[in-house]
Length: 225
Image (cartoon, rainbow, N blue to C red):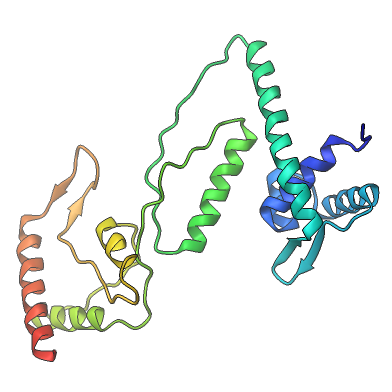
């Protein structure tokens, strides 16, 4: 039976899953130097190198990957066992279901970072995190013929500049763009207040404006092509 402190394996799993000492530090509330010392301690006890340092973080060695595949499953079993015992001894135990809005972003990196923060909070307060589905969205393109055509048409019609914003909307556009490479796509819509609520309201006059805008844009597009 190994005499290695179980906490060393917890730290190892945190670093392996984060691929970064600094991100692991935030997850398990230990300083980066402390984590580095503990990983070195584990490597010395096992007499094997577990991580290689890289510019953007750390990467598991072959031995580290093999250890992580085994230990991570064991850590989940330990955590589940602790949870079961705590719940049996806690008169206030039960299940709390927390609903969350859909996960969708035009910036995949920021989306992943936000999900990591949510997972971290769930781990901190012993909550179960479950992501049913990630809804697609199309990324912002610096150069877009469609966007430029829309902007020029709007200015001609209403003598006003358009405001271009990155927003988390139009799942349909995400589904289409995820199946067509290099698709030039934009979304336009009428003015909607209190979207996705019982107080949602749409401006009728803006629907007419958007209709005329879209119609003139399509006419220009057909002339160009």
